[in-house]
Length: 258
Image 1 (tube, rainbow, N blue to C red):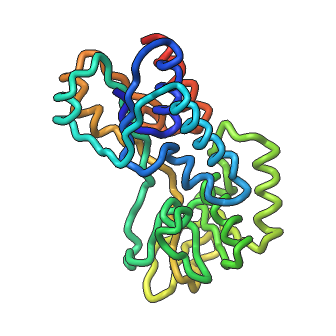
Image 2 (spheres, helix red, strand yellow):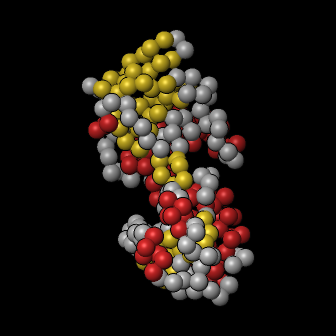
Image 3 (cartoon, rainbow, N blue to C red):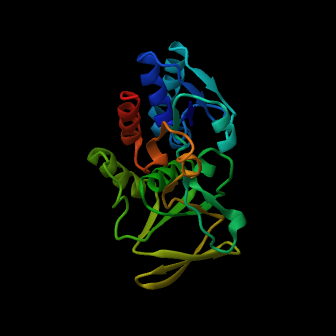
């Protein structure tokens, strides 16, 4: 049993099927891909969607049974009696309150068009996701301001292709994205974003605030099952939030040794 149809879950299923096992994937969403789906929303990230589609086709070609729109709890998992259980439950965006939470969204929500950022927005967090989201907004006519606590954007992303990083750093100002570094958003209310900067407090008028401050592991199922299932594995972002390459290699190594 593989719980989670993101990159790690799909790669584990692929390798296990090739090796002669009979993996069964349970995915709570309506399609395979996990964070590839919001990540691939900007047109310049279309390769993420292509990878999700490739995994979908590969698992179908290999005859892997995939159950979509199926979210399992620990009791259901224990009742199914699989030889091995792999949990690839991914990660979820970090969130916090800034007062007017009705207009505070995650990058994932706006990338999937579940929420409308409006005509002007402030993105909290200048990591890779925040910068890519800002570029996509700007290219679609939305005025964007990035507020980053560190002294430069994409300072802690890695490993990150230098060419991609340098291109993003050039494209953001070229497309009119305002970047405020060494700053912190303290409040959002009545369309006003309060920002503490090195030069003092600043107010930015905005229709929304987009949180892009990283992800945290979704490992609740593992914590609840680790003493009840003898052959249990935790994969990908659920074990350690990283990137696509890490998720694939982690899944490959585990699936190759089962």
